[in-house]
Image 1: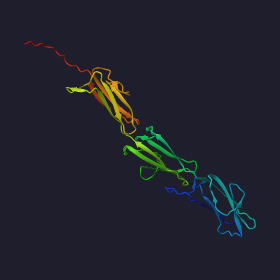
Image 2 (image 1 turned 90 degrees about the horizontal axis):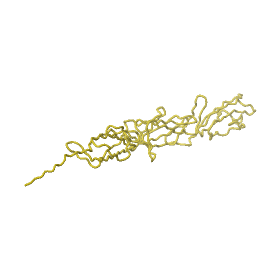
Image 3 (image 1 turned 60 degrees about the vertical axis):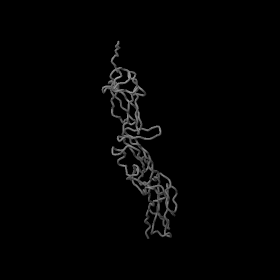
Length: 305
């Protein structure tokens, strides 16, 4: 009678969690060791073993050996060690076999880094331009990240694990975009879906200048009062206006925070533009006028009849 009885070692995966994205729980080997999902069952089988002829014994994590009656449930993360063998009715033990693996029950964590220009306002709204790159990756201390799924608004999920970067190119119109993502590791652990609302803003502010008091036009020339007051306003529907820059009569552009009084009497040329919080710059506008209106002297004539 043969004393060595074949033992089959089978890994059964328990599917206690069902994810909306439907990843499959699985075994993954990194080239040297298996990674198993949390809840995996270790089942020892010997279909040809007659219970009267012998029994299966095992040791889990170096405990004393004990008869095998039911699958061993892996309910803790980390590495484990299993030893198993058969012992026949006369006390002869087959060669002991060993198995070790790592239990991974933690999903990857989404990490990101924003490259190039972005702006966060006081309400924590996030603004991008088409030059902004959102670099994304999954951090996983177990089996490692296998998939990084992202969708924009209501589009289909796309795996960005190889690209690792999201960019709202010039093909996208300015406005709000909902980014949703989730990650899956190599044994099927799936993270919760994270959502981030971002605003794309490639449009520069609209800027205007008002001269007070109102100007007049004489012979196609624009005239203002000697104490001309210049007011600058800008509007931006995206990230908001950051600054207005003004140059008068060829001087360097400087930021203007309030109304501005023209310091010189004579011909004046004012150039100005606005910048939003993402660096979008409006075209430079130019207005020329004179605050030195000169009228001819009035003469007095005497008429005697």
